[in-house]
Length: 342
Image 1: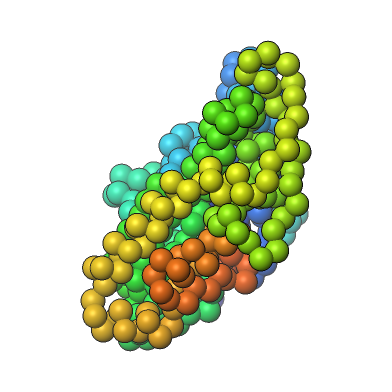
Image 2: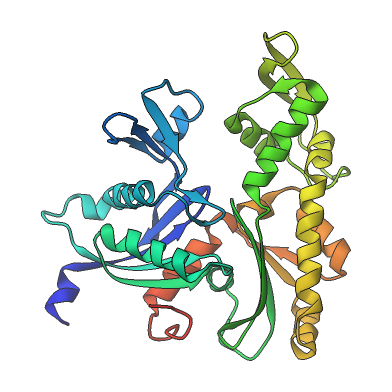
C-alpha cells in the first residue's frame, strides 16, 4: 500500500442530466438534482442539488438557476465543476477530514459522446480534486448494476432512459457491439407534458409541475391494469392570466407522450436490425433490460415488449442501476479494466 492510497478516496459518480448520484464505500451517499443556483453579480454558488431545485422557476433577477448538463453532456463547464466539487463536499465521511483527500473517480458517460465532451467531463473531475479519472459508458454501467455478467460471450440488450438521453446498447464480451443514443428521455417527456397543458387546457405550468405530473400520473399506455388517481394541476390560465386549476388523468399524459415514446420504440427497432444474428438469438432468450428513471413510466415495458415481441424486464431500482454498476466497476477495477477509459 503506497502513501497515495492512505490519502486517497474512491468515488463513483453517475453525472446525469437530471440527477447526480455518488457512491462512496459501497453506499449511495449523494442523490441530488443536477442543478446549481448562482448569484448573477458575483458568480458565487448559493445552493446545489435539492436546495437549488426548490429555487428553480422562483428566482428574482439577481439569482439564476443552471442545469450544467444537457443531453447527458456538460453544457456549462464552470457550473458543472462547481457542482461536482460541492456534491463531493457533502459526502458525510469526507466532511470530517482535516484535509481534502485526492480522489480516484469512475464517472459514467453516454455512449454517443464525442472526444471533446469526454475531455470536458475529465477536466471537470480533475478540477474537483480527482487524481485519477476513469470513464465508463452508461449502458455498460447499467448492465453491471442490474447484475448482468457483461464479460461473458453472450448478447444482452440494455435500454437506459435517463434525463437527457436514451441509450440503447447490445453488449457482449465486455464491449458494446452496437448502440444507439437518442435525445429523447425524461426531460423531453416533461416538456411534452407542459406543451400539452398549454395547447389542450390553455394552462401554463412550470417545469417542476410538469415533472410532478410525469411522476404521479405519467403513463405510456392509455389502458393500465391499476391506473393512478387523477391529479389536480395548478398553473396560469393563458387566456385570462389568472391562476387556475384543472384535473388531469393518466390517459391524457399517455396522449401527450405518444410521439416521444414512438421515437424510443423506433430506436430500439433500429438497434435490433443491426444486431449480429448470434447475439440476436441470445437476446431472444434473455429479453431486454430497462434501467434509468424514464423506465419507471407506467406501461413503458409493456409497450416495448409489444413492439419487439420480446420479454422486457425493469431493473429493481432503475434510478440507481447506473451508479451501482459504476460503483462495482470502481471496486473491481482490475476485473473491468478493459471497460474503463482512462
